[in-house]
Length: 58
Image (cartoon, rainbow, N blue to C red; front, side, top):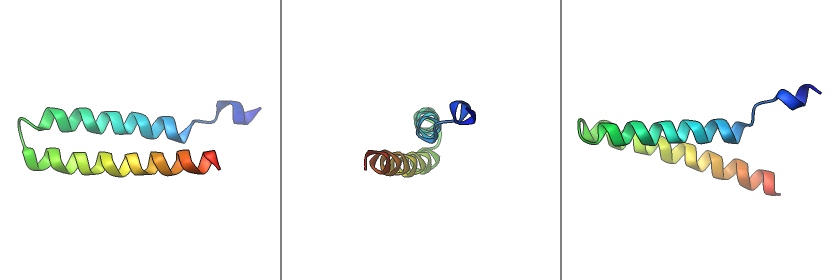
């Protein structure tokens, strides 16, 4: 029963990924270096999502 309310880690990472992409887009007109750093973070989160998805598929 307690597992019913457990948060989905993939969904949380997807939200974080979307937030990072939006922030990177906003920063692209202000500070390109910061935008690139945010894009790198988003790529790392995307890799984590892919890893969790592949682990769930096995």
